[in-house]
Figure 1 (cartoon, rainbow, N blue to C red):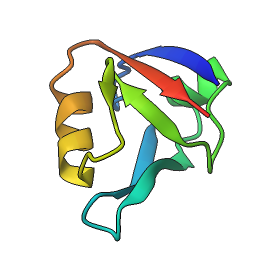
Figure 2: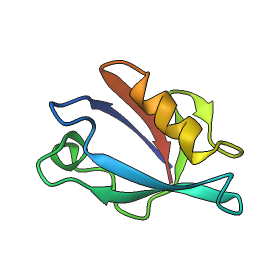
Figure 3: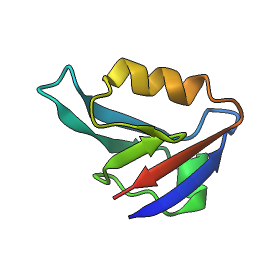
Figure 4: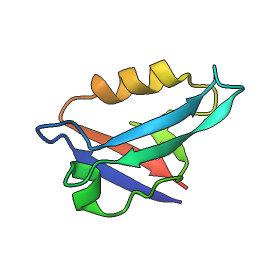
Length: 83
C-alpha cells in the first residue's frame, strides 16, 4: 500500500481508471498511464494497481462516475491511496 500525490498537468493527471460499483462492484484500477503525463513523470502508478482512496474518500462502494468527479473537482492535485 502506498500513497501518491499528483499535480494536474496541462492534460490532466495523466492516467485513466476502470471499474466501479456499476461494473459488478469491480474495484477501481489504473487502466492506462499517458506517456509524458503527470502520473508517468511521477513514476509510481502502475497499470493494474488498485485505487483504495481518492482524496481520502474510500473507493469500496464508489461508482466510476463518482471517482471521475472527485478527481476532476479536486483542484490542482489528487491524493491516491494505492495497492
